View (cartoon, rainbow, N blue to C red):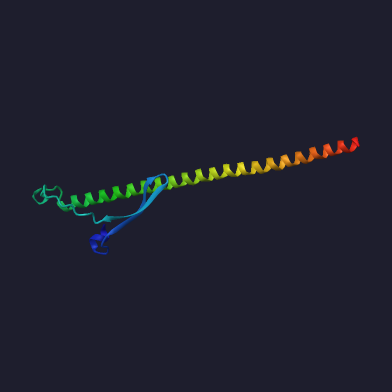
Length: 131
């Protein structure tokens, strides 16, 4: 805010993740400062008296709004990160289950082949003894 007042910056942009759903997070660029000017013809603020002063009230409201926007952006970014981690862990667990099933099938086929080979050897041995 001081940089804006001093004229070093024209505006402050906030870049963060917006949480849409567990599977979707959208990157967002949002103008943080200066806040957009709201034109409201129903209320003429120039006729109102402010205590302590119009500039101090305005500055404190702008600061509170900026803090709120930053806090919300942090919460959404943390939520998006946790959702991405959750999705990654679910995918890893599913891949692990698939690998277990694949290797179990390979092992069972190999075991069945060994049993079949042993049975054929036993049958061939008994046939040889009969003749």
